[in-house]
Image (cartoon, rainbow, N blue to C red; front, side, top):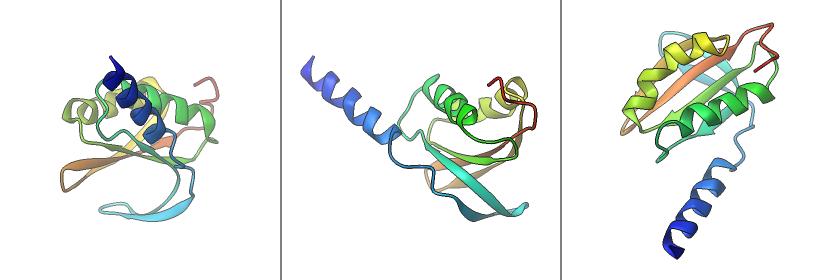
Length: 113
């Protein structure tokens, strides 16, 4: 029981790491994107990546681009459909070693997320 509590605390700390550093990123096929947030979902199982993404989309301004880091194939496959439901644009997914970077842009008029 104690190990589970420690592990859950560790995962919470990982999710809370500063991801709000704005920077330009080179994305194959799209060129340079101005990323406003990065969401670290490495090691997270569904539906946690989707829930963290939903939270971050609610915190950024319309037009902002977020980057979701995930090593869960099922979560990565679900992002294009999730983007439609969240009123954001799925831009692309880039494989980097043993994880993926998913890029989403929050649409204007998506303030109710």
